[in-house]
Each structure stands twice: as structure tokens, then as C-alpha cells.
Length: 221
Image (cartoon, rainbow, N blue to C red; front, top):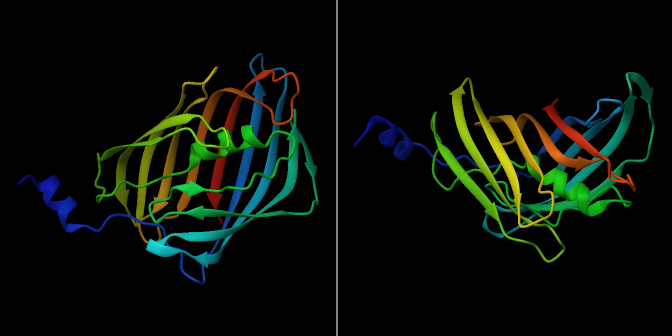
């Protein structure tokens, strides 16, 4: 038996904590930059996750509050006070997200396509440095295309898992492709930071669907 295999067998698989007292808060930034770099828009949000209902098998229904706090348009900052969007979503212990409620009513399906890119789902087995795993999703009834994530653990230290990932949609015109990095807590499984850049995107609500590079940043407070 190799040392790496022995370490895997000795560890427990990493899972998300969905206890009654969870209260995870994140600062999230969405940036859409035109391909010719003529325009760039960033929205700044606060996301808050709390438990709505414990489900069977360790899964949970979560309350998700998303509050828009500001915008940056071509370098100009604007503070915004808006009514938070309150929705729910179901999550498995490994991190699979179902029944997510979009906050954008103009372009809700494309918002869901973007948001799922940064969902970090763990493998069924324990993770050590160098572990690689693949996640695949089938087309959904509400119109989400099939997709594939490829994850790799690059480091585990100080209670944190560091990794990289790629994402690609399948069997859809102009599939979204993305590359990113993540840091999660080995204590509670939740993200500490997730960043990625994606192509074949457009700004939410843009009727012309002008192509952009989409950058996403999530940091736990």
C-alpha cells in the first residue's frame, strides 16, 4: 500500500456543515468585461446562508439572502441600498446544489448557468494533495445544459484545502468555459474563497448578448 493511499483511507471524506446554527456570509463580485475592453461593470453583493430545513441523508434546504451593495462601472464606484433577494436552495453534503432560485428576473436561466460554475462539490472519498476528481451533471428539465467540472487539490494545510478547477458545458451552442481556484475549510467544508474567469458569457439582461469575459470572486467574511 502506498503512503498516499494509506493517508486517504485514514481520513474522512470532506463534507459541508449544515448545522442548525450555520450563518455563513460572503462578499461576492461579478465582473463583466467587454471583449474589446471598452466597458467593464462589477456588481458587489453580500450573500448570507442559514439553515431552513434539515433533509434526509445529511442534505439541507438553505435560506440564501443576496444583497446588492454597490456597482463599479468603468472605474466609477456607486453605493447601492436595495432590498435583498431572499430565496432557497437544496444542497447535498458533498455540495451538489439543486432548486436554486435566481435573483435576476430578466435573464434567470443565464444567471443559473453562471452561478453553478463556482459550486465546489467534493468526491465520495477523502482528499489529499494531488487528488483529482470529476463532476458531471446531466441536462435538467428547466433548461440547464450538461456540464463537467474537473477539480484538483493542490495543497492542504492550516485547516484549508486549496485547489483548481475547470468547467465546460456540453451539447449547447457557445458553451461556457471557465478556469478557477478555490480555498475551502477542512473543518466545515464551506468555501473560504472561490475565483474564476469564464468565456462565452454576456452581461445579465443584455438584449444584444454582446460577448464578455465574466469574472467571479467569492470571499468569506
